[in-house]
Length: 585
Image: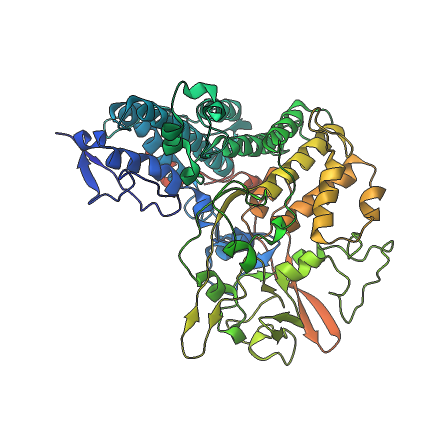
């Protein structure tokens, strides 16, 4: 009998509900016969979840951008930025993981799901069958999107996307499959997302009345519906997540690197991106605490349901109590490794407290050369530990006289004059005797702030600052105004009001995206889809008393063709039909 190898990864980030179908496998080798048992069959689907890149969010690809550097000379993204990025060395790559996930999902869809008895009665079996197929289509689309984001690029000047393998490839299959065009790749992703949307509920929610059961699920009881579509599945794939990813795909597709007409007002791709973002935001209001989602009080109180302050569209469960992130980035005086140092470039992106850009002569606040952090956007203090800031009830001095925390003082000290504050839990402790106080953390797949920013970007690009998608009502200006007001920008926001043109609004929206989504894995991909240079020299500051000396810290070695990433060289060499993007060797 033929053996199938199931490289099953422990599924820790999803809600484990009733039934024994989520129990772990005893081993990683099983026959096809056992895949008719739901415990093993669902394990195939789970690979689609465990291989998501957002399940390991704290990789800090920002170190390869103008937002951060690392004090670790072996940091993979630092090596990328210093000129090591190649088809043989691409730490940013998701291609291999996503293509592997897609094949698992194809196996589940075409070899497994219809051959399993999923429920004790016909009603629950059919509900499970419908839901699990919807999950698989959605996950396949999402992995196609991440693969496309990774390798979409030009071959001989023509824009290509990914391989489309909507069938299961076993050991006897032909893997030498050419890439499809970018357009056909998009069509494939949208088709899977649409299929998923037709099968999944908007949210998983326990109900009390049969009238609440969507018509697509037929005549089933409340008890049967709740067993399959109830509260306990909230972090599994649902239609709300599908709608968010449709918006993410459309935003990428409309962007200048992938859209020859991307700078033209009235372009249809921007219209589609704005509409899909508006669809995803239906009945969603901007969370008043969404920009502080990582703080202890927010994490500890986060509910499992979909009413998470309208910020979390999709996240992992609260993880086991941990401290790995804090150990990595805390200043060395607090027994941290001081890694991931925000740059002066990033600090300068924060406006003054009244919303005018840093140093703008129209601001009511003049820059104080001896205290450049005064009267700034409150998000600066929530994102960055700067000289003189208080962190864990201690004053952190990064200038001369700051001891371990001073710039370049030790191998664990900051290289730029700044330490990372965003994402970390301040209530984690590393005692000198080795004792550690751990705290809860979770990773984010999609939060609604990202989708609000996508809407604002697409609406402005299509129709300008005051365009609103019909039926949605909010303009790009209004959405950005809400985000800035939430951040603590003084009202009225005169700078926002002063913007009249699409180009100036574009600059503001891109900057707001930079600040709001900082250190969440967006910047490297945003610069590339905007077709902006990746090689901006990063800067830092040396401080002595009230004297601030700004200096170059690290040059970046990126070539223009690198806005499109490489396919792995081993795959290109193994499969002649798989053509490499221009410029990569």
